[in-house]
Length: 234
Ligand SMILES: C[S@@+](CC[C@H](N)C(=O)[O-])C[C@H]1O[C@@H](n2cnc3c(N)ncnc32)[C@H](O)[C@@H]1O
Image 1 (tube, helix red, strand yellow):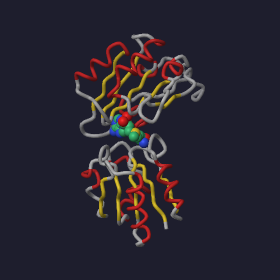
Image 2: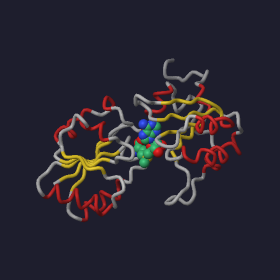
Image 3: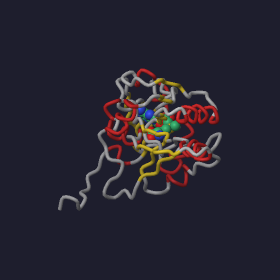
Image 4: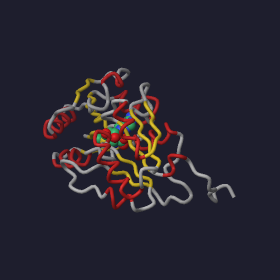
């Protein structure tokens, strides 16, 4: 008895892993987050489809439990990679309490799909790393955006484009308005939009394009590429 939590990637079927594709093909029941994964993305999979948008955790878990106990193959679709802001553990925790095993299948996160769309690296020879964060909100009290901005990291902000003014204000206080940044809406999809700009201008450009959701914000020098050489190629 098992539920498969499958990373669907950023919304382009070609970016599914072979394993995700096989499991979706074999699934009797596919539960998907309709707010981010449109039902049409699942057209080539024949299993029964249920949109979990607006459902309570208990309801989703009950549907999965019932189906698994009826001997059905259940795939719980997660956008991008399940382990990044996927609220996956809450579901696994509940299923385990009911004696149901779970398997997580990784997917292409919007973090990486957005960087790929921009044809950039998130790191450079002199960038120690990346922070993947979200702005504070209902469930997150403190986002530490200002503190993180003080470190020489590339900042990738998910779930934040609707509050871009707030995000920009916090980071620009430290890095200034000329800091390079980008916003990618619907990375990898047909209607993808990319905006490459500076902190001082990005909010206005995002509002002009009427982007309010399903977009990734990337802040850091790497948005403009880099001149250094690594030691990888001698
Ligand atoms: C609930 S989080 C889930 C993230 C997901 N687990 C991942 O790894 O991409 C949803 C957020 O991911 C980002 N996102 C998801 N799909 C995207 C896409 N195709 N293009 C750009 N950003 C996307 C947006 O910031 C959105 O608000």
